[in-house]
Length: 111
Length: 112
Image (cartoon, rainbow over the protein chains, first blue to last red):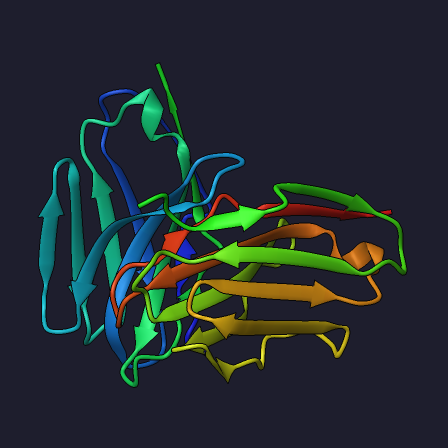
């Protein structure tokens, strides 16, 4: 299956804490992407990491990719209440096939 | 650009009726995707197009579902006849090459 699996399914933290979400997959990939979805809205792209990259940063986000373990992690530092959302990883296969999404991690950040 | 535009945003219909969902992708994007999201099954890929040609429709649940992309700026997803289990949020998304996907706000379908 090309589907990524996020872990944990749900995460509750306090403002200012860091949040870490993981994604595991089983196939070879071209790239792995992370998306955020606020309740009732469409998904919004956060960051893309290619199969030959190990780490990328974007603001308070840090993504790592370990292709030998077929896993990725998304770290949100100094979380805010506004980070409350569901977070999804999505895979693009090596042939450039479509993005398949996992079931997501629901993050709740309380103030 | 206005982003990916979907219509209608909400649709309530009765079982057996035909439902047509519409999508206008971002200009210049060569891939268009239709996804369905439910609590139970998460975000499922239904079908995707490249340069208006359907590439993979293996996610379309049944023959009741059909999708078309007559030109680069318009796509439809049709359900005929609709059933209560089709109730979900349907998302359209577009992209260029293998890059990031841009999602519309979704069409929330309720079949009574």
